[in-house]
Amino acid sequence: MDSHKNTKSRKRSVATKTRKRETKNGRHENTKARNGKQATKTRKRETNNSAKTQGDHDVIRLEQFSRVGVISDTHGLLRPEAVESLRGCGLIVHAGDVGDAAVLDQLRLIAPTVAVRGNVDTGVWAKALPLTRTVRIGDLRLFVVHELSRLSIDPHASGFAAVIFGHSHRPSTEVKDGVLYLNPGAAGPRRFSLPITLATLSIVNQRLAHEIVTLHV
Image 1 (tube, helix red, strand yellow):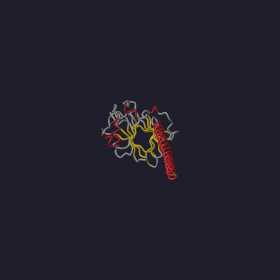
Image 2 (tube, one colour):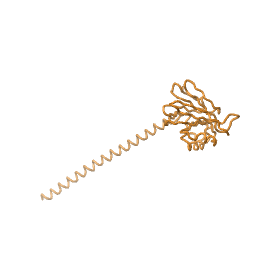
Image 3 (tube, helix red, strand yellow):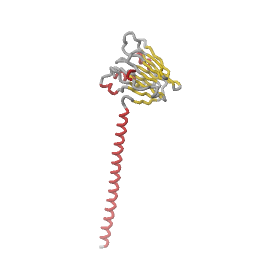
Image 4 (cartoon, rainbow, N blue to C red):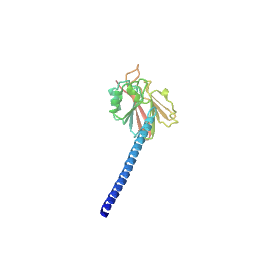
């Protein structure tokens, strides 16, 4: 009889331990599940917050390059002469009126490329392009906009080294309040008797040097 009681007691003890382990494991699994859900929510929040930073002021941080290609108003035409002039650049900035997504695809084969949306960029593909961009290279910041008339900030007060724009098809450079205003001109179809041009920027001792490049086409 005592042996039977001891056996039953041992069985109850084992069953109790098993239930405790199951309860503990269940709590552990629930905790892991809650942690997993929390991590997922956190990632979603981070993704949403990241998405909110995209848009008219899209900050792109890039390492310092010795040479930056600046091009604008291609209107769907990327000339071989432009491709050759941009070779060796560490970064290409397109100041709008791209005209065709294929232009950006071809530029990206040369170097990392950033672009803004111009007034002729109305296709579905162009909706991904912001109206303005802030490009940071080392300690220098460049503000990119297609039409200078849409400049809504004070570049000098905001600490920009340069404003890059296009639209007029006329290459121009001007320094105001220590800020370089650079229009690379148009590299696409010729308008009237205007030259076909692009520009390059060189960074020397954290200062910008610029050059307007005429394409002989």
